[in-house]
Length: 589
Image 1 (cartoon, rainbow, N blue to C red):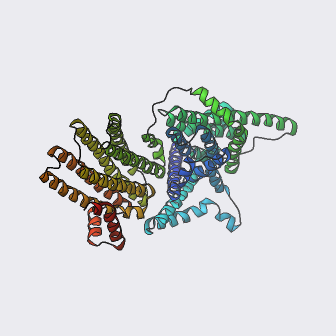
Image 2 (image 1 turned 120 degrees about the horizontal axis):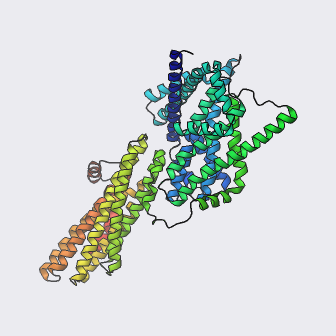
Image 3 (image 1 turned 60 degrees about the horizontal axis):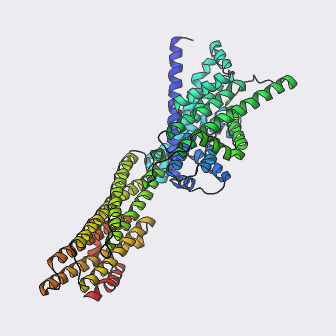
């Protein structure tokens, strides 16, 4: 083989690998977008038996086209406390089976028949067609689901074209004695495992590594005895990404990563021992020949058989695998869990799930902020130093969560997310800013209550009644806001704005009444200042609640939306406004 032919072969092989990996990534991303966060959410909330864990591991990996992505995500689940270690073992087992789907797709490349319909099943014939269909759907049809389906078709087409290019690139190697000798050496199990592991570590994809092996099998130089240890090594190589994902994680997440390695290592030892014992028996007793050439289908079959057999053998010993992982990563004291743990960097591998975690974290922040305001308002009735201290600590935590969320979302928006997900990102960013400001006002309220205690200020009976009324109103508007944001409830969001307007009216009314009491000497300046500061913070909290409700209503231009609501009061708005007037401020008018 001349130097020019070698250069052509190497460049074609590298191009084929690049197209294969790109196609696999594009198709997996498209499938994940099409599924949204549903599969991942189900996976995270899994509470049933180990068999359903295995099944969902298979399904999620088949959709995502990457066992590494699934196991890395599982490490993230375990790290954030969303999944128990024992459940993760079943999902990891299922992921190993799910990853074999790609090898079966690649085996279609070997279909040769005089039958027209059978020939159409060969990807070489239909890949350009689905590629063209995918491009049309992706570029010219603006519906999001159709665009995503087009992305899947394009990815699948590029994947098959890459596979065909790899196959054609390695075909000339079949005539080289040196290549045949190299393949023969891989029959040594240790060398074969090492080769498979290294290739998979380099390209970071066991599916692509198996695809390359299938391409090599087209030369006719690869037999089952040589292919088997390479496939075992490929399964071990895919554990490297999971182990790296466990670095810096909590102990249970590290254990999940170690379990993935043990599963493949133990499976490799058992499978190779079984194979060589069977080979020795069949060869000596029956004269069975293991030197026949492997092909894409037999490699897919071996890959699937290995993973399914390993799952069946080790499934009864899930408890022992868990104990082995605990012995490897012994118990030691972890840092205190907080809600920020849900924003695990590993989830960024699956943007839709990462975004769902952002939404859940924002809800937890909202609950903290609302509770903090209620605790602060309670200090005006009965002051407690410990409660005041807790309010300041919660506000610091909310600030921390806001920073983490914003930084996390910035990284998330650099990834490929859908239009609906982009809208959710905007909603979260708007909401977290208002929630942080609400929590700031809880600190202001606590400081005002502290001043009231230090200066021994007492309110008149009328002032106490008025404060009771507006505290009830602000508590209700926060509850409506929290409810509408948690459940994305439009009906609850529509209850917020009329109440916000009523709170504004109450504020103005209470200020007028305070001035009247000042004139008649019923209250002093000191109590008046504290009352006015209290009312001002309550009014600001109501404004932020209104902003959050507007986000839920999908109107991010809050000024324009609210102006329209006030100018064109709907029947529902007017009804609620009158209801709130009667409930809150008419009794004190």
